[in-house]
Amino acid sequence: MKFQLAMDMTNEGQFWNVLNQTQDLIDILEIGNIGMYLGAQLISKVREKYPRLTILWDQNVRDLYNNIPAINLGADYVTVDASASDEDFILHLEYAHKLNCKVVANLNADTAGSAQMLRLEELGVDQISFHPNVHANLYPAGDTLQLQIAKLLLTQTELSTHGGFTPANIFPVLELKPDIVCVGAAIWNDPNPRRITQNFVELLQKYK
Image (cartoon, rainbow, N blue to C red; front, side, top):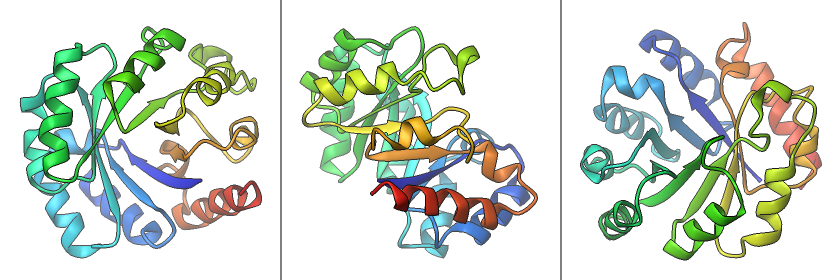
């Protein structure tokens, strides 16, 4: 399992403070909400400072033109809303793959389900990302049905999981061993981002 840090804050100072403390512990940096405020040039700044990091640009768009700047600037992954049309995904895949960028389909509560997972894998997306429990109000009860379904159905597509994970509630997800585990606010809202990141990384290692 790889560990992904989602940056959905809106403060640039906080972004760099957290990244500087955790960059050597994470595998993938997700530039989420902060990207809406600072723009795709943030990819270049991160790449220059921390060239080893894999960068995921997460704006969860449908139209290719919204992701073109991030792809051109060297993002390793870009996200596309799972509700996008087949044509939108095909355009993304054709353009992104030419520049060695992978396409992630983001499944949300209104788009999750086995039919959608199979459709996305057939289209050839590189990764499917979703909240294991589409009923977020029930989490952290450990309802990982969607992840169990994905593990049974999908044979060629990376699985990434996200959504309110803490060191206390993440165990049901780790037991199913998705390819990528993504944590955000639990890290960047913590007084000691490095310490809690280390806690998560140690938990992942126990399930490898």
